[in-house]
Amino acid sequence: MDRRRRGHDAHPQHRLPLHPVPGLGLDLVVDEIRRIWALSDVYRSASLMDPRGRPRMFEEHAEMIAALRRDDPEAVVALMGIHRDGTRTSIAGLLAVGSGGSRTA
Image (cartoon, rainbow, N blue to C red; front, side, top):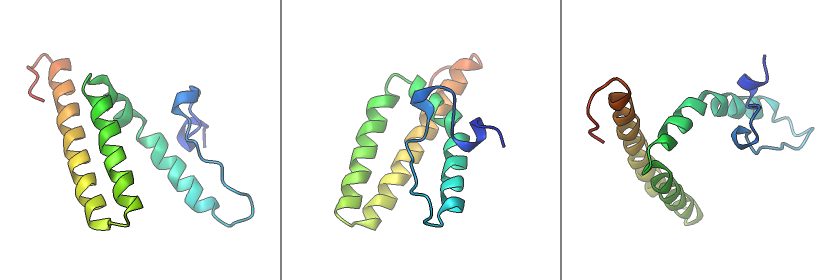
């Protein structure tokens, strides 16, 4: 498996900040997290191309973290749904602009 697919992109900002402790038996979990991280590279890049994307993403992530700290799984699920929907809208708008359509996001 090449380094990019394992979450070790050449650019430092794209590397997954995950440093597992050897010997804990979590190799499969860590490999899966790295695989998902690598697959999400295009999604993360596209969502950040929208000038409103970065502040929205930081705010939404902060809200999800706060809900996790409150031990409020229902809020986390609801906030993740809002986050996904906003990202879909943002990416759809970028795709429309890229294909010559008008921006609707």
